[in-house]
Length: 274
Image 1 (tube, one colour):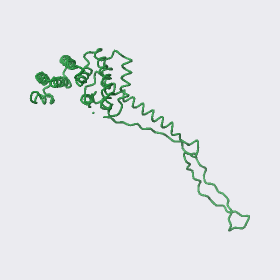
Image 2 (cartoon, helix red, strand yellow):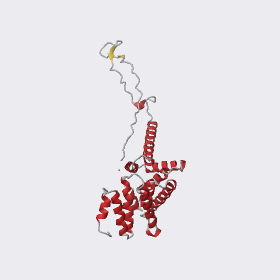
Image 3 (cartoon, one colour):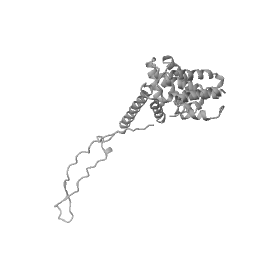
Image 4 (cartoon, one colour):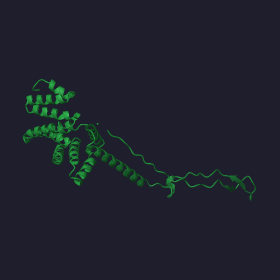
């Protein structure tokens, strides 16, 4: 299960910060220096000399007067609130990219990497779960949610928890495909995930069926670079199950459609059966 996560969903950046400006009240104006009379021992008693004292210091400690004291707690709360608001906005923007039909494959992969690297996957999952619940007829929501579960699984070490997330992902992909059988991300990621399931679960033929159906669907669409991947994965699955002739035929078919794909070239350069 752990291998599945890293094989399918390793992807590329995040940054940003929030500034907070707080102003302080000005200190009150202090009266000018005053002339005070002091006793002068060098003069006869009963007389006085007038001496000019230096100006009284006008700087007061900020905390010395209740009127000037700054309560740091409201400032900290405001800063945290502003930071949380900015984070929510960023997550929503990235999720909008993930569910957009206009966003390219590379854009979506970059969005996944940014969410993962910034530790915002939990927020993205919560956002997608709310959207899916609020609009159960849009396939893009469960399709992205399934990928989010797998992305989350790649960040944890607990194997049972990874398995739970993988199962939730599979159910989300099924929900997406029931709404839109042509959803490429849902079918591709589901098929790749299933290819890592233990042999005793007998998912081998289901993997073949998923990849075969995906290839048939994408051949009726304008070609895109990621469309080479199903040929690669299907061939690898055949190779893993001992069907070397099927594997090479699949890779060859993919290379005919995507002659620049280096990985398909590499597979075909290997001796048969390896």
